[in-house]
Image (cartoon, rainbow, N blue to C red; front, top):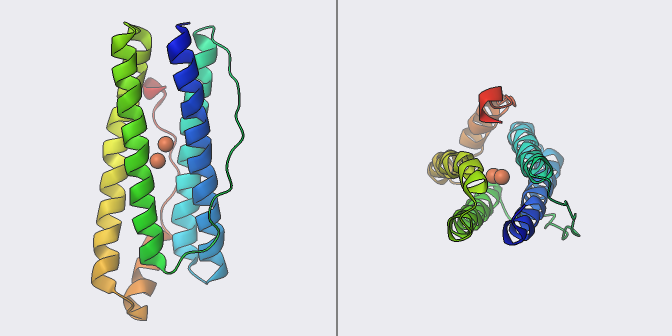
Length: 170
Ligand SMILES: [Fe+2]
Ligand SMILES: [Fe+2]
């Protein structure tokens, strides 16, 4: 496959793996402080990131490219509050969105139509990711530090389940 794209997609594999690691660390923190619903939401988020990581991994291999796994940096392990967690989550997803946008531009510059087409799924996915986190953040801002409100949000987040995207999206 195109060598520029091979390198760029390998970097994204590491970005997605770090995302999975970050959400797992946040899940552990939430579970430790008694917010099991938040922890559940973050565990599902971890599964989604593993799905993203695998999607890039499979694509590089399908194109006959080489996968070169990189070292994953250590994620933070404590946060000031649930609000802080979701502010960091939004920041992180915005970073990932800019990575995806760069990849799309690179695919265009390299005339790599297969990669360009593959990346469109992630363009849509990032719109959803940012939207999910933004609506959660809005609720958390309304709740402030009110324990009753936090408890209600925690109950709501306990209901999230991982649903692998349809085979058509693979
Ligand atoms: Fe992702
Ligand atoms: Fe994400």
